[in-house]
Image (spheres, rainbow, N blue to C red):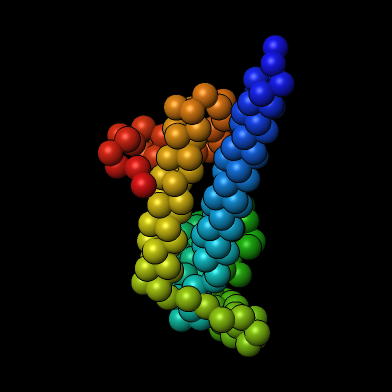
Length: 179
């Protein structure tokens, strides 16, 4: 083999290795961006609701438990029944507490929520939805770029694996829909 053919082969090998490195680095970069977007989505999902929403949820929960508890405690008329010397039977004493102390429980829990929100900023459901929608669009765009890189690399003869959690909309997208 002549010297120029060896140099050509070596040059092709170096170019191929450089191209492989560039493709892998590009893919790694977009995947890091996808991870950051997923982390941002998780962070938005973890933001508590505004205080008013938290209090309304708590009150609804306590009211539901109190309504059920009231259905389980004896009625006043049962104590008036002359045939009941020992009083009516009741299995769970906590029903009495919930049935008659629900307003106090709600006030105590509301005070605890207010104290907890002194250092926490909540987010409205509408704001959460808007942020998640915006991040979702950015995430899909990033996943479409990732898929485009993978397909271009495959066409060039490189083997790259797809992430197990890749968005099917990106993986199954038509080539014309990729950036």
